[in-house]
Length: 235
Length: 229
Image (cartoon, rainbow over the protein chains, first blue to last red):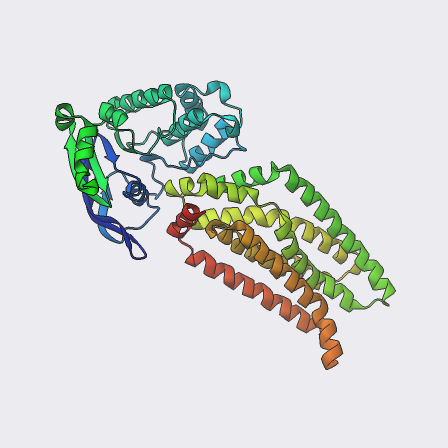
């Protein structure tokens, strides 16, 4: 199986603090790859590097979907910060990105997506009136607006209601099963990840301490594996 | 164009901004017409006209920039608007230029209106249009770039606003009382040509500063700015 992301000895330092320490990782095409770790482990920093927001201090990475014109047309993302414009409507928030991605048939695509995430009736409402769950759905719609091959999600379900979390989980599973899609998802929600991920990596203090695949996850619960990986931290 | 359209939509969707713009436009028009009264009162001294053509628009621009609402830019940083747009691969320079242009247009228009009024009655076409199409756009454009770069980087927009406020007061003081002091202390009043040269130098200085900012600013710095805000 080919890899969509390959990281080789990736390091990131801020001033004197090493936030990522020799990360080497391969993410296969068609996988749902979970990245778990405590706060401050370096998950968001790693995601920001993959999205080109930070430069690695050393090491290298390859994303095999990079588009030639610089706009990352094959990568969708959800970051911690929604980046929604409260004064713009749901439609306008999506239209802004549709223009950045230079989508053809912008209107049709946006209408379809609003229906897909159940926000059709809020089409002309300003984003500021949406609940947190609705906002996250709108951000997810924005992330898949250009039908990317790789979806990078940074804690997409944190603080959401159970129903929305289940909806997200099903949505991501369906998205990957549709075709050659890959999802990299960072989260604290072990039970959520356990249900959908095909591969998991545990990140602690900037290092990948363990990697597991679907078979490992079937044998032992993720919670157990996660706690085991950090035993030395609290002993 | 995508970002510029979004910025203008956000700016003009702000009622406070519209009110401020109308207010400033009226003040600028009033200044334009008052210059004529001053001109007649002071015995048709062309220095007055040159002063209002070259000095006043610059100082008022700084003051106006400080008074415009900056809520949209702050919200953008806090909500991660910038981070999300840059994560698409959208060029940082294009983003800076679009945001600066969105700030430039509403500030330039009232100042240009005032100049047009002055040019209209004074008939100083060469000097007036030099200021209108060269000096004023250069200066306001550079200030807009500096301002936007600052807003994107700063963890404390309030502090930036205070700095701009201080600069505005300083510039207005120097430009307003500078020639008077120079005359009282040295017995030397600025020649028209010298005033124009100083205005050009000031504009070029601002352009240089903006150019440095654009080349120096990095995506990582902006994201870090958001992290610490």
